Length: 640
Image (cartoon, helix red, strand yellow):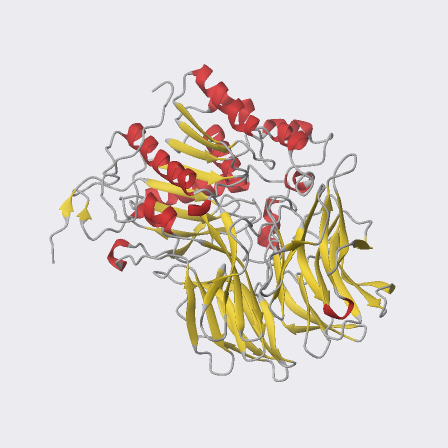
């Protein structure tokens, strides 16, 4: 075996390049089973961020089902999701360019079902008996904020409202016999993980509705993924006991199907999220999080027996189940995310499509380890720790690695275990990474999630600082080279940690929030009242909002920062980053700004993902005085 070369951390040459990540990998945005076929939505950075719909037929042949001129992406809530549905080989989808509903029938070119205009569509339920879809619609054509409603879209064209009057809708689900429709809805200022209502209505043969009734949920109970069993029993996930557990309605009586300190729910940032499905009336496959780590389980509702499945995956997404087959996206410690088919009787599985067309020697990969560390309030916070790993290099004796504290977005979201090539990009170059689940993250129960209520910019920042210091004090990382990075809400936490604490020596904000008051005026409907709970209600809490805005504390921010920003971002508009950059330039702090034309909230194009990765590496090299092994395009850094 070749003797590792001695080289400082950060200078290691890695086979995990930005070109490899962006050019040789895809993402998955949804799955569907239809007879013997499996369909998935495939996000392709190399095609400008286009989302294709791909089918593997029962005979194993694989083909795209919409032409390359189409991209299946919904922009409802700006985050979208739930952009296609399938029945008997026919595919309905929301096209990114016009947000209309289109149908692709076997052997025919796609044709539009909705008119051109200001509406967006997602979360389709196929009502085959009435030859229509029921979906969520967001109408931007009126005055003020857009209207959200449930909409019927005829297979022959034409639309009709199904239900309206609430601020938000999700998860329209038809019973197997088509006689009942369930959905969840909620109103400002709640987000769907705060409080939602589950409604059920009877549907006549002509589509008219009667006997609409709220059957679960409320302002302080979060309902997730209503689903009908094959026998027509309504199931759903609720956090009424402090954990997102599975329930069902038996007549008018609510029964918990299984109760434990397990989380079956996820924050509904996107439509189409699923964590369970039915093999038959008494057998359910589900994905659940135990202490933040996801696993697959098989439940016999008759006996109450719960059996964990032994699979080579540590993270799971997009579960769908249809009798003897299940499909999901699975990710391993060293295996990239993949579409997986599973036989529900034998639990044997096969990989249908990998998200990466390359293989990396595991000796270049860092394996994440779940850790807990003490917090300022005497409780615990959690994270996944990754140490440097590269078989070709080792650091000089006595040198400790720089640490990147990585902050997830949301802020109501979760860092999850499983191979993340962007994390491996850093660890294979000699960085340690702490992927943080600060207090307020999901996957650890309702009480942990609600620790962020009124405390955004405080407890999340405390946990960033505490996690970095804890690793430094245990002599695992270099206390003089602690950096912090995050996107969206993670960008806000990054900037707040830099402004309110003197621990980190550099930071990177990806489309992050610098001014909470500006966000209140500029952001979109879905999140326009989010901060009522996280910070306080305006105008009464205006002083708090201003006090927690990094833009108002530039005098306390004394380390270099790089900003990456999509110029079409409707969630966190570019003026947020630009105001921070201008203020830091005026103060004389080293600062860099990398804007991207045509990108929104998050970067989808290969060339921009590459530029963000390499630009951040170049920035840290200049700040800490090391020369990256990669040949990267320089970033202009003011005041350095």
